[in-house]
Length: 134
Image 1: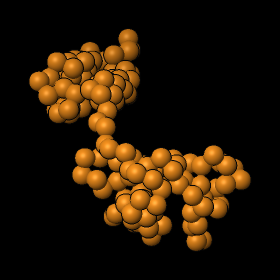
Image 2: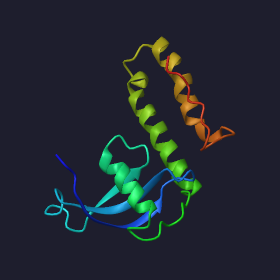
Image 3: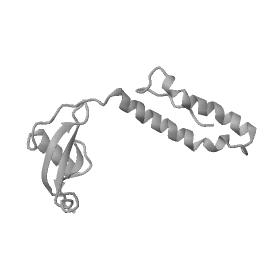
Image 4: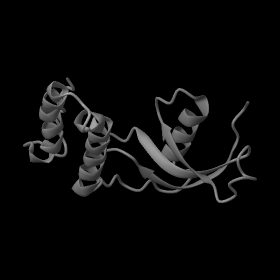
């Protein structure tokens, strides 16, 4: 299927390296379902030809000036790391149930404590050393 771009707007850089552009795109095949357009990320190294083409067209200014990259606040990264850490804790909740053998509980308790201590690591939230599960 050929992807046909009807229009694009609101481009901004997604990274400092200027290799990815976010924009609102209206495609022929999605316009009926999403008349306001859809969020789209175009990159110079996109595996799809239409992604590379949209990137180059945006770079040439066809969709307006590309707004500068604005790094997310530290709180964004903290939330992401904590959410991942919480998911890992949840996956190991079974190890602390009353009917779990004591040896299993003890082995997993150290891992779970290391997960809870992640926010105390010196590189938090940008550089995390995740513990290895037993």
